[in-house]
Image (cartoon, rainbow, N blue to C red):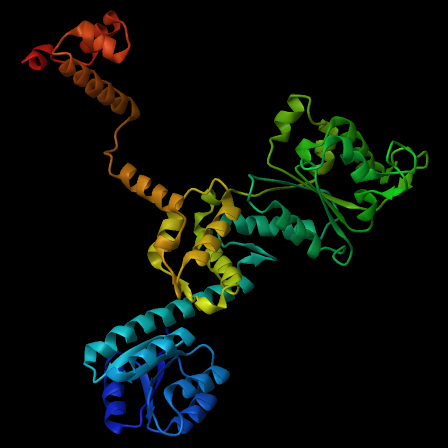
Length: 461
């Protein structure tokens, strides 16, 4: 990491020199001045990672100086030096966004402690900035984020899909980003300037979905008071995204197959075939091959849709991507609470997120970070800000790791031995009573005692 550049401002030369010496010992590059107007010009011309300023100064006090700095350089960390009598003013300054204060007179440690906290914050800010740059340049395809081998292979397939006009079938668990992938393919295709029309096949009632998809003509059924264009027609020359395609009723699958094969369809109640030029991207979290065997999904439609298959992996299979995703979602949601001045996330919080298994996949990770941002006091998201269920799973994982590993067969035998021994001790060595406690037949218990080589004489004693 490049050297941290610091500016020290105090109208007393001795204070400037004392603070400067402490900062230089900590490895910082330091400039000092006794004039706040000169300090403003230094900030304007150079910019600084860290600014330490006295609160009470002639011409321009520390708060006025802070306000000027914020107009020029919003990313610098600002620390106030304050005498005992002005500590309430320093607290007010912190409410405005000043990072911390140093009491005057001060010991070296009273400078070092807030300084080291500030340096850690600046380190996190730089790491986050570097990660954001990686995300923007190397590890994304539109809004899909990742650097793992598996996700980079997905990016490769998506780029080929975007350059083609073939149908795409995206599969994957709920929350893996199927709609994001579909939008990314559309946005990078020749149809990008045309409509991207989304249909959730599982969310529209069965009695309405045919009309929603294909439209209807006036008078074709009760309530059809005018002609209506369907979503297939709305997507003409663009992309039709059929989410949860596995939920589509068989009779509508036939109509969709006709759109894919012939590029034509009929509105409900119409006799005139209409032509349409639409690219279809479908998505499902179902096993469509099993649905074909169960006669719930047409095999011919499956092969028409599955020209370019894309299987999005669950997050637990691409845990290497979690730090990148955390940075992305932190940046996305922290701007909603600018008053918290959130700059990063603690290492132990990231470790807790890495330990979780994410049944809800990327959507669940994003939700957990949005929750943490809502509950953190800032400027850093801490482990305790995360949802409790994530922390509980980490605890459960730690407990599991403390169990000695052995073959499962041996573990089962050990458990049976322990539970039978406990029942025999409870019954005073009475096999019938122990069998009653364990809810098994006496003969079965006797057989297990022999197989597990349990010493009844030792228990009786």
